[in-house]
Length: 223
Image (cartoon, one colour):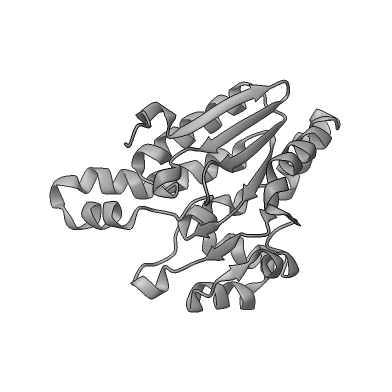
């Protein structure tokens, strides 16, 4: 994997009450494979077990993630010998989403560069979304003959309304950070170089609040 060990494709660190999970395949634009999904599930479980009050979800490199590795996905879906792996790949998106929803801490996601397809959709459950100015969001599934899963057909309309959700999904139009903020898809836009600092500042502010109140606010809103 071009110098990156399998265990390093997603990173986790903890600093006090704040955890950080980082996609770490920058040379591959943080494409998501089954191995990445397995690691994300494992690390969000670890973060929950560590009682992280707040979790920063970020990515190394020029892009947050361009989503599923299409070549990898096509090979899975067309190779009968890899059927079990294909089923696990599809189910792992659902498992990851449930783990993130069930996480007792507040999850802040920091977008930058391209955020595409399932790479964006699984972050819809994040509690606070910050986009760098260079963020570009796109949902290209329909255009390449794929269907939406991973609860995005329920979550996206809940966040931005049915009409806008259908527009993004059906047309697959590119969305800038400012437009995403205008329609309520992200909470905040910041200068691209400032994203790490803003993420840390926001996490510190959240972690300073009453932990039990944070946990139950998230729980009740999600219900």
